[in-house]
Amino acid sequence: MSIFFMFALPRYLTGRVVLALASVPLMAHAETGWTETIVGRNVVVRDVDTIILNQIPIRLNGVDGPEVTTSQGREARRWMVDYLSGKTLKSALSGRRSHDRHVGVCYAAGQDVGAAAIEAGHALDCERFSNGRYSAFETASAREEIQSAEYCEMHADDLHRPSPS
Image (tube, rainbow, N blue to C red; front, side, top):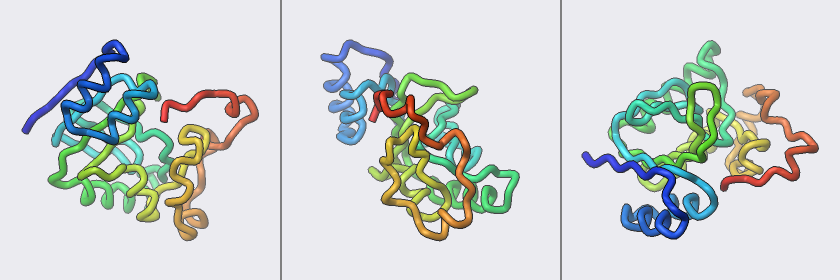
């Protein structure tokens, strides 16, 4: 198992370091303001939108999942545990924090973990933070059954906020 850390490097080096890791999806994030990349297999799932990778808590950017205090949340967490089992994860961190968590986009076997959770019907797109990146993956049943968090609602001042993705 290999673990790589990439800390805030000058922009002209960031793309080269990510390319050296052979991680084309992460290179796109590095070019648009993402500050750190973490790779590893040491994963703990808190819930469908929060994982711990190499002891670093990561909030999946733009993913709105049900809380584990609900039956939907427990089912979503079980799905995420199964989905990530045995996989190496790559996470591009944005440099932002949400409570104790770093905010990032994670990939397993080249697939965006947030998109997979939403496509499987276990979460919704949090448009305020994703800028609609995941809206096409939402299922009709998830839209009916999962209550969207209030913090995901778009506000007028959000229209002028740049997105890291």
